[in-house]
Amino acid sequence: MTLKHWCKNLRLAAFIAAFFAHGPLFAEQNKSAYDLVAGTAMAAKELNYQGVFTYEFRGTLRSIKVAHLVRDGQTYERIVHMDGAGHEIVRRGDDVGCLRPGDMLLRGSDLMAESGSGLDDLYSFYIRGNARIAGRLAYMVEIRPKDKLRYGYVVAIDKINGLMLQSMLISQSGKPLERFQYVDISFPVDLGNIQLPEQLVHSQQAPGCLDSSASADPSISMWQPNWLPPGFVLSDIKVDSATGDEAWMYTDGLALFSVFIDSAEKSRRFPPVDAKLGTTVAVLNKVTVGDQHYAICVVGEIPDATAKQIAISIGPLVGTLEGAAQAVK
Image 1 (cartoon, one colour):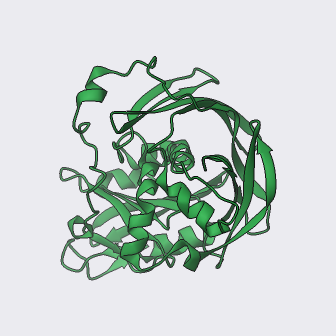
Image 2 (cartoon, rainbow, N blue to C red):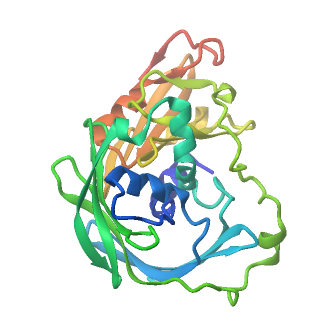
């Protein structure tokens, strides 16, 4: 898969994954805002639910139907896009890194322990009142970043079961940039009428997928970032042994960005890029190491200045690439 293809298709996958990364919490009145948000990281391990949610950004509105079920301790989802040509995805909950790269957000709490940071080190949390979303009462929680290196959020969390019913990404000026919101949702005890592909139910792991218990190993990379925003940790890394192409994924537990490194001759086709699509920034920088050419692309829901600083900080590990003594933009 080329860098251009990755940059084009990461966006909606990461958004849907981020939204589904929040799940059951049996909220009580004395829960703090942080408790409410931290509890949602127990996503989708107990609840059966089905519904329709909308995704809105930059004047575009999409409708998506989801059925989420727990069967024999395993979670499954059927996702149907209701607009345009439409398409359907059926996936198993532990197949992280398979259909939706952003699913690595599900590992956010474990990764925070590894980094020594907690969400409350990076964000401030405030309960801002109550709301009614999809006919259900919810707590409104503001998540405000403590620096200018990431965006904030406003989320609605179901008062009874803790499912996240709405999520808005907020700009540094306080403007909503995009919104997920359920418009209809129900919680049937049994969703057994949903038929799942046999190979999905019985397979131990889909081909090419990262096991959810595996740790990302940066030692397999020939590159390294010399600067990262505080709190972001590596959640996934893939290296193509045939081409040398690399894909990294980082999360702070809420925000997500990816780095794609395309090797040698293919990178000649990519001009430098500094672009935004809605809330997603894509910064593509061309690097020459000796007589070899590489393209480095940073894609994610982070401020433009943050993405640029990450991109220009990435360089080869000494001794791993020919001509590593000098890399020029």
